[in-house]
Image 1 (cartoon, helix red, strand yellow):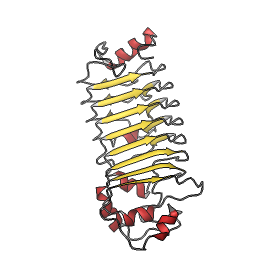
Image 2 (cartoon, helix red, strand yellow):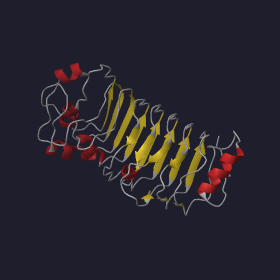
Image 3 (cartoon, one colour):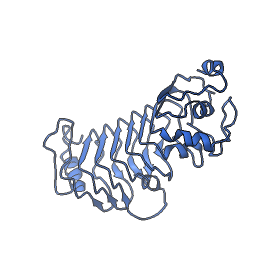
Image 4 (cartoon, helix red, strand yellow):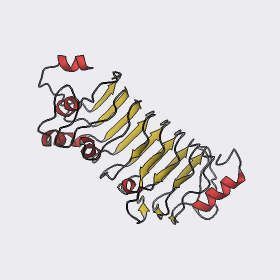
Length: 280
C-alpha cells in the first residue's frame, strides 16, 4: 500500500470514493497513514481498517501533530476535518496490536463525533473500547466481537455520551467482566435513552452489566438477548429502570422469552436454575 501511495500524483484526490478498506499493513513499525486518508478521500463515508499492526488509529493531536507517519505531519486540519464530515461508518477488524480506539485530544476524538456505526472485531490487545468521555454525537450502532483481551466495554463517564445508541452487541469476548466499569467520575444515573436492543452473547467471564452502584436507566429497551454468560447472576447492583422491557431472550430462536417481573430478578432466577439451556 505504501508503494501505491508513493506512486500517486502528489495532489491526486479521490473525490467520488465513498468506501475504503485499509488492509494488510503487517509491518510492526508501520504508522497509520492519516495524512494520506484525510487529504485524498474528502467524501469518504465508510472506512475499514483490517488485518494490520496499527497500535492507534488517527493518533495525531487535533492540530495534526504527534503522528509517526512517514508522509509528514498533518497541516491545515480544519479543511480535511470539514471534508470528512460524510464519514459515518468505521470498522476495526483483526488489528492484533490495537491498544486503544482513541486517546484524549487526538484527531480520532474529532472523527468519532460523526461516526454512526462502529464495529470492533478481533482486536485481542484492546482492554476497553470506551476508556474516557468523548462526544458521540451520532453513534447509533456499536458492535464488539471476538476481542479476547477486552475486560470492559466502557467507563461510566464514557458511556454517558451514548445518547443516540439504539443497538449494542457484545459477542465472544472471553475476558469481559462487565460492560460498564466505574472510573470514579461522577455519581449520577447512567442512561441509555435510545437503546432498543442489547445482545450479550458468549461472554463466559461476564458477571454483570455494571459493577457500580449507580442507577441504570433504559427507557427505550424492548429486546435483550443473554446467552452463554454462565457467571452472570445479576444485571446490575444499582437501581434499574426498563419500563418497556417484558422478557429476556436466551437464544435467537427463543420466541417466548422469560420474565420474573423485572430484569434483575429475571437474570437472578435464570442463573439460579443452573440450566445449560438457559443463561448458561
